[in-house]
Length: 113
Image (cartoon, rainbow, N blue to C red; front, side):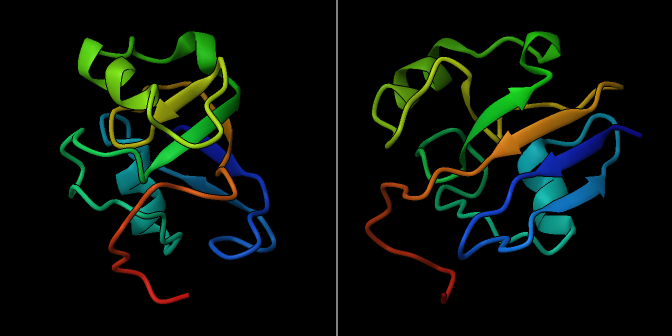
């Protein structure tokens, strides 16, 4: 099982977290399963940027981003070289460390903060 380290985020995960996830699940699913309520306005269908994360360790071992994901990332707040949509990262054997950006572009939030 891959280990995922989530750096502290003031609202979503104030103390940071370390979770384990099932190989083959998406990073977004793994966070939600572990009560880390990252936004996911499009229900994990690669149609928004609300689950944008920055991969600080393990980026080179991830599945490749699709053209659709790359196009959406161009619209994400705080885009960086190691940005990905967590709904499109399929977990394998490798550990990851991620950072959730301070903001996202979501006109309708499902999560009360």
